[in-house]
Amino acid sequence: MREQYNNKCKISMSSSDDPSGTDKQPGGTLTAAGGSHVGRILESGEDSNGLGRWSWITLEGKNTNLYVATAYRVQQENLEGTKTSFAQQKKLLRKKGVENPNPRKQWLTDLSKQI
Image (cartoon, rainbow, N blue to C red; front, side, top):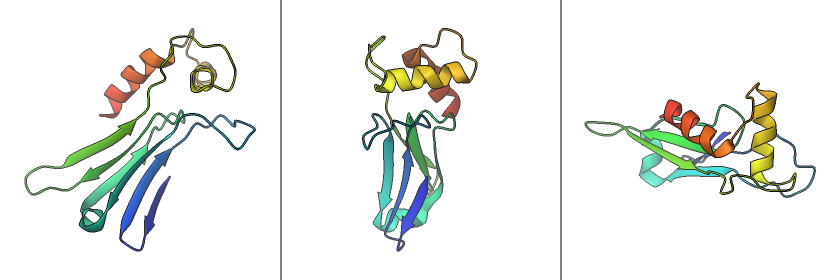
């Protein structure tokens, strides 16, 4: 999700595509730029896998561009419960056809591709 407010602030957010069923959903990220930096934003985006693991913006520089990412990696290798970020990501990875998904390891693989 990308939004801009009066050319003073631009945000890029991510959240899991798995509905939590409550007002609270664990995980997600927000990357923001404000002030004069807003005009330097070339592009922005989020975790295209729908897992809510990162959001990013690319800023135009004089000689090079700057890629700024905010990333969230689940802590636990295995955690009981269905409402945790770990459980949500594991469920979504299974839906995408990943056998025996490990959200922590998948994070490294997918973020490396993104960068």
